[in-house]
Image: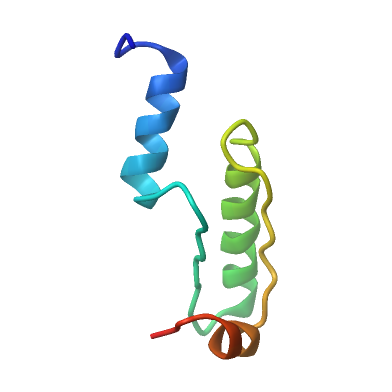
Length: 73
């Protein structure tokens, strides 16, 4: 496919930024809850904007859920 094809460009951006095409979990840690919530909303908004590539965005899992249900470092 041509390098300037919009689909190829988006594909490469996702690959470069997120390293995969399966499930993605982003954790945010900090001391300022408001800033963390704002960052979370912004990331979710951008991810939802890639609806052709991303089927579902859920961004309010509690850390305890992640620790109990997913390999977590």
